Length: 136
Image 1: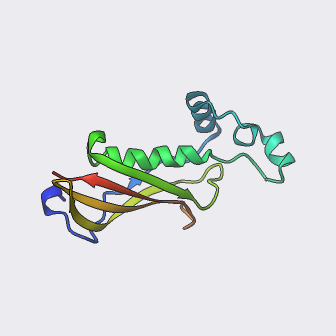
Image 2: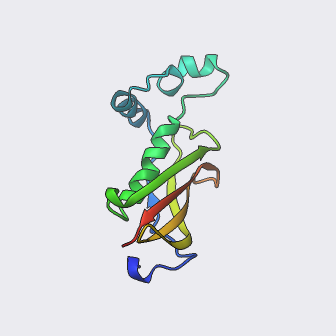
């Protein structure tokens, strides 16, 4: 799929990701500064009523951003927003996907409005988002 041929309903190439591991969570905590113990300490997670640690929501948002920047250069992203809908548990295998919701003209640019989401291997959608990207 080339940007010039893009049509409403077209799918972006999916971005499958490796299983979420404790190492992934610890590295992201260090990179992001999100050291909330429920993401890295099983005892803290259990004290909060959870079975185990879970991924930082912003990690999923970062993965979805990676889907976008793997498809268009960063300077073409006009807007990007998300809504968190479920937690991403340890060992889940997220997949980032996107679909062209509409093509529009604004400010002299041809733009695509994208519907985005992160889905786990069990079908749970953990993140829904939208982006507006310039195509020209």
